[in-house]
Length: 357
Image 1 (tube, one colour):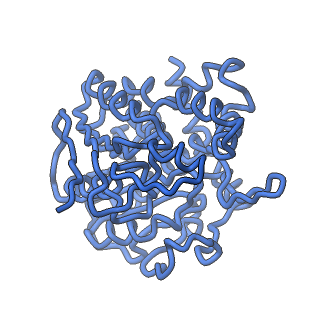
Image 2 (image 1 turned 90 degrees about the horizontal axis):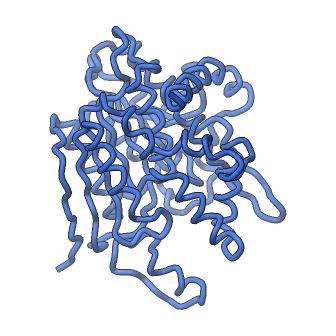
């Protein structure tokens, strides 16, 4: 019952957010970002969703194919916005899809003390609501779309899970006869157990600024309350507890790295197990070694980092969402391209060795 209430709240949020978003939040020019990993990227073929009357975000292509059949809705992770999704939007468009990513209303630059955060906030409910509105917009514009895929990374896994469950409950339906909004969900290194993530962040917060920031942001998203003060609010936005509400999905792909230093590695197996128990064919991909790509943020690198010891793990850690080479991220996108090409999802687990040579 509580999850259904949240779904109704998400839909209600969709109805009221656009005016607020257009008045208070616009897309941040990507040239304003200092992240050197995006050097040389272009905005070719990418439009701003605010120009369509939607909350802030980006979409591709700006000149849509005559009869697209696939819509991909991408959900960004913590500390990022849609600038880091531009290449993936372009890649999806090159394969004939309409692709859209939203910036999450309420997430914005913020200065706290002497530190400025480019994209502060754990605005996963807002991200779900904005993305639901964008998906419904493009479905209305292109009735030929028959395949809708949600693709989330890290915090975007949390947000995309909320959107998927609301869509599966038909509280945020397609335009046709109340059908579920999403057909497939790809969940890459996702925060699927927010309660666990909160306690991990709170536990390291006294000695780790990033942990303290995550704790504060998660509490803000839950009305300023700690878990002890409002456990129901945390449960409402914990994906593994919402798995029964995702039963209308045709399939789900869950991907994580063996040595993830930001999201506990038990969360992806928990999500895949919960989905299969709910009748959703879910396939888990566990990436072992880094292969030829960057390691990402690793659990084994935490202590060496604290003591300023040079260390680079051979294992696959938590990847940055804009990467094409980090093997966890690459595995997720390989599965997206396979689904777009007509593939399906079978229950099970695949180990991605990531061995070089």
